[in-house]
Length: 255
Image: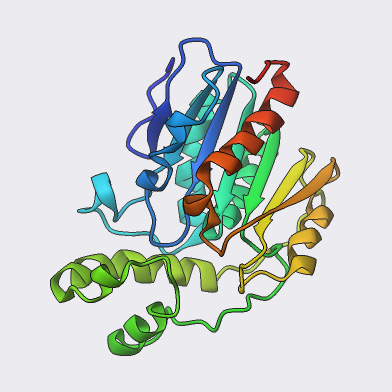
């Protein structure tokens, strides 16, 4: 790690002379620990960080952010000093949208990503297949959360714990549900790789393929086994694919 990442970015894999930097954006309700196992699988040629937004894990005492513009602005401020090497943004679910908006803002400032990888998320103009719950009263919101397998049952059943986590989880859902894509003159000029999983009931294949309209560069898609949270179930397979893709941009060889 050649520059200080600050509290917004948690190092996953450090390298004194990385061929490329990877920035990972977690899903709603998640923090940097979503990617804690990636170090075992990522190529040592790279350096990797995970976004740690306020209100979770090491930043639990801070007020969570439910406004996309505010979140993206501060995320860009954290990433900008680390753009002296080729860099790639990876996001899953809500993280895909945050990564996309971060890529747009960085490009507008003249810092062009090498690649954007979006996972488990419909393209920005497509409607979500999920009914909004972020605005609901607490009891109804918690009942709605039961329909997602991203929050462990033992957490939902622990009243004291869920009370502590609720502001952050609700803010993330509001961030996702209130997001509206604002068209600009130019699409991204970096390639987009869109990833999905075959048993994800929330993802329409046509909406994943719709990401092709948001880049003037190359577009590819790939499907994995598993449900919406396949990245936790098939981590090795996912990171192996990412390693291959990143090495194609750096010329590094993978085992």
